Length: 218
Image (cartoon, rainbow, N blue to C red; front, top):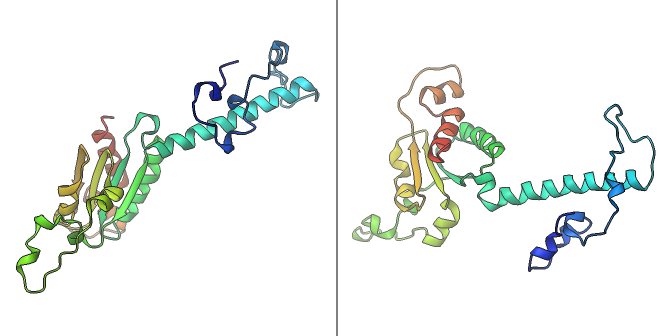
């Protein structure tokens, strides 16, 4: 058997690992317990319940639980499967339809995706970006760097708007993402559905997914 995880990790194993053999000390089961599969290729179920069949069933269950933990932890890490984490800054309402559709597909590919709906772009500027202190009714309230980074920090940043790209200027100015881009409305047209008008403007979920993969180098 492989070296138990607790022997190669300095920290104490968390409670959710209890009962999974991969994280436990080597129980020293005999090789005879795994030499022959308890379910033959011609069978669809265990024919006899004994120590060997119970042990192999536990191994299969442990493998599934361990795989689940690995998948969940990799999605949380922000770099699942080697893919970059990505964030969407979105202005508009109907545009959220293809963005959320793209999010679901991207997460199936292994990306960790965050969508932020921008309702007040002005608050996202830095104080020095605008001449707020030169007017009679000065408004100097802007989002702090820490709060901005908490929302928008990602390896890939895509600004998406169902209007002019100018509404995303404040986000693009402050974004620290090495790879970033903007997808915005081009022109109006008469179509039969919101999906068709989005596609006409290059804002379909497929177009968004393609742009993310291109920025990620895929």
